[in-house]
Image 1: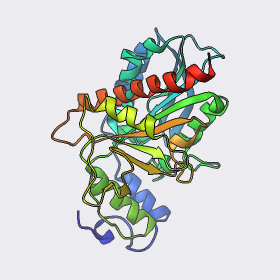
Image 2: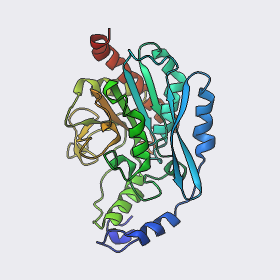
Image 3: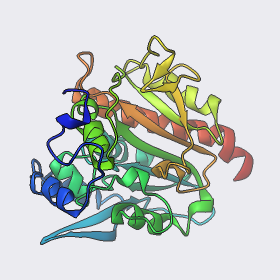
Image 4: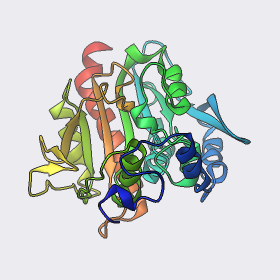
Length: 313
């Protein structure tokens, strides 16, 4: 795509979108896959082994989307909580299916040691349209704050508000794709009336730590586990990944709460955002799902060894 904002087909260059532009954008969106058949059906099959609950519902026009969470069946108030979220950005497929794969293949390994809470598809409307935003052209992953403009974000915050102080680990599963550069960042620039500044898409897996409370040992433990199944994104010529300085191999940092990111919604001492590159010639969709599941396992193992055994004996 041309690097100028003018190349985006909606809006006037330099002018933020109003209701008319948002309506035009919405009219261009169409369903490309099924939340019911690809996600809800998988959750339903897990119901025999885990507790499943509806924690909210999205109403967009005539469409209704139940928001579903999966809990440990042996939930105990004396155990710490691990929170796993996926699909905050609906187009980031392995975030959703990596979370579900972890539950199906690995979650029972931690029974009796942690309480597990998984919201595998936070943004089902966007999942169906393979999009970053919700139907109101709002990015849920910049909306985790008071008076959130995104019901996806508000519903998840309501789900965890009573357990936030007991969450020891939060893994938020994401992807960085080629469409970040060809569609989503140009759309963002157009929506906000700003120039589009192109960047490079990192080839490989990386993590986003919290710059306000970094946990370098934890982040590296996850990187070391994932590199057994997927390649790690290298720094670019400027020592950066996606415009942020690389603070350790495969790790960058954002101020999570300041940006309203999902990984900021609890007081967990260990939290990270995973980023997988599904468009790499060196990775398949299945490898991306596996990388997400391995990252979750490595994170839980680290938290159990370093944190939980010290505080929850």
